[in-house]
Length: 442
Image 1 (cartoon, one colour):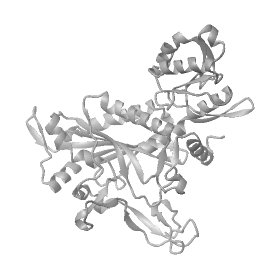
Image 2: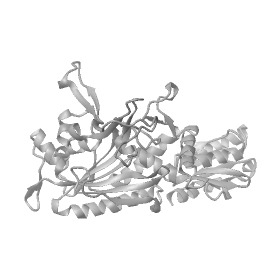
Image 3: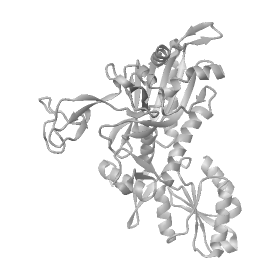
Image 4: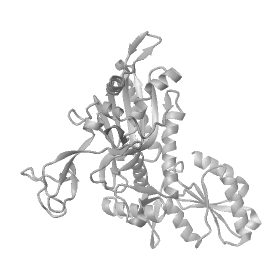
């Protein structure tokens, strides 16, 4: 398959994800629900490995980051302060014939300025703004006072906890709050598999700094973000830093860089880095009547810190990782499908394969599984021929396979197969532990 044949590649990825237990359509047995997907056993592990990689890079391994896990439901005044109630919207157009609705910026515009329905070619009506927040009711009463929203982004929970963290930990600037969590957006037209969803997860940081030093913090986080993306296996030549110009940035931003990635659906936004100035703290301070200023003990200066926000969608990161890892290779007279994940994020790192289901091989094989589980993520696989099992493990991205055969009973050795090279080496069982410690840490 040619790399340029993006549509076929996307279809192959979607098929593999369902067939091998990575990602399923939401509510699948009921015909699905647009904009929702469920993660299967391998998918949830891959997703958590990506999240853990991000958390370790930006929180665990640093001294200037503080983790937050804010509530999904917030006081609705918080969304008024942030501008979401009045301004979190997309342009909506509707077909007068089939009544299907589309995002105006996703429909081609004719030379005369009109737009036509992709389904029946009817001229679409005037666009109007559609607020994407999901409304809900809190409590027994259903009136204006009970209206709340499912959060459309995780950032709000960090801004409203700024004072709590400062009062509890007295951090020195610059410092950041980090969060991984769910967000909900009533997308007009969710599409492209897990790229555009109504229920999604975000990994976000709000990094607070002195107003005069924002450029230093911005550049630091830009480099760190690039390093993290490389660490999860995203090729540098597929990542593009796009400077967002005046008029195209969010109203709160004075500088924004989008990290765009070459997905099978084209070059699209994967993540963003925004200089939000002091907009959010000022707004929340004004609406809540709370002092959200910061007092610098060294300079004896009081001010509203400015904020840098690196943000990445978890699902988009998962899709970027899978599409980067996906390969089809001709081996002999057949095509081998491989997910060439970095071993650090692969759902399964080692598969142990007894050549036979017989107890004389399954018992020592399971003992090997037990010992290797202390080192990495291990799967026991005894179903089908050894060749088919190799192909299955290639397809789910397992870097190494350990085959236990009848010679093992005599020489206490096993065969280790490398996913990428398909080369095999014979190793004593006693050396397996150190072998995989070296390989997986490398």
